[in-house]
Image (cartoon, rainbow, N blue to C red; front, side):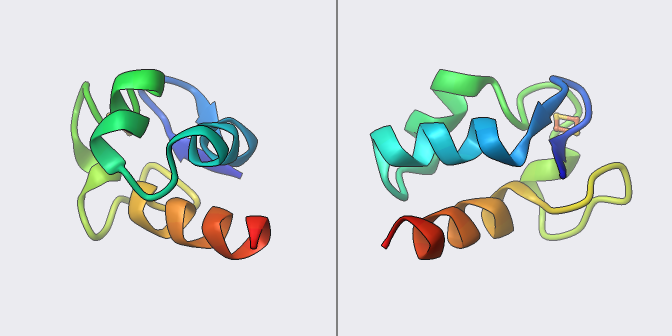
Length: 65
Ligand code: FES
């Protein structure tokens, strides 16, 4: 499940960052560079990815509970 096309990040990589940083989106972006190139995946909608960064963080938090 692709979360950031520019950086080639999949959900598992975001989940790892969430495990470390919780819902701190800035820390997750610092750790992964997600959303730092075109910015699309960090917006509410992005056609280039399966799930946006915000959605991925939310889902990861639910799965990690
Ligand atoms: S798709 Fe994530 S920065 Fe472009």
